[in-house]
Length: 192
Ligand code: ADX
Image 1: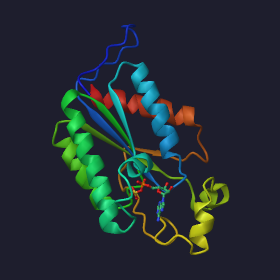
Image 2 (image 1 turned 135 degrees about the horizontal axis):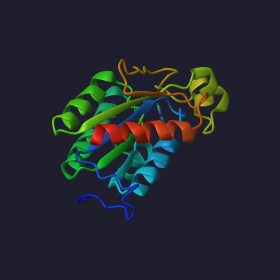
Image 3 (image 1 turned 30 degrees about the vertical axis):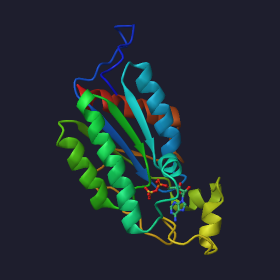
Image 4 (image 1 turned 60 degrees about the horizontal axis):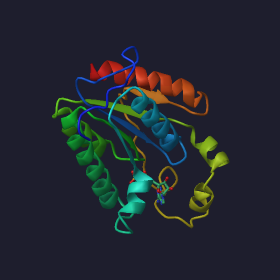
């Protein structure tokens, strides 16, 4: 990302004076990817240079290298954090959608991004587990509960929620549009 693409409308143009990372963390199916994609589109519309980093897609693109044990998840999450930090040099906005289950590893990423003078907006995606199990669009919870997938986050592997997230979103009680509006506002505040 090289600088920001200015919007043509000065009323809506939002040129960040510093970068920010919006880090969506939460269980599989909690709405991270959907909200991240909407947020990326909204911020680009406001003239912000925005990069979307989706854990699922990065894993697929990087090949079959990393699994779901703690060490591999940490390596994966640290790589994402390093990419975010790089993007902060150009006042970019990085949007991350990754389970990123370990608090200490997320905090490392926060420290790295903040050390570049950029903002870190941790968003706790907090859909209740029974709702995730009922919806289960990929059928993964069913398999995990049957023991067919080992180390599945929230079922047979830990998830450590943020203690002081900048925002909390529960898509079982809030529309994507409403959450999106809140997040855009937080990004505005954190980048000016
Ligand atoms: S992270 O824990 O390393 O941050 P990431 O967000 O990149 O996870 O990828 C999670 C996705 O991988 C889930 O949405 C799900 O589709 C898939 N997946 C496959 N196995 C597991 C597992 N054991 N635990 C969690 N997610 C899994």
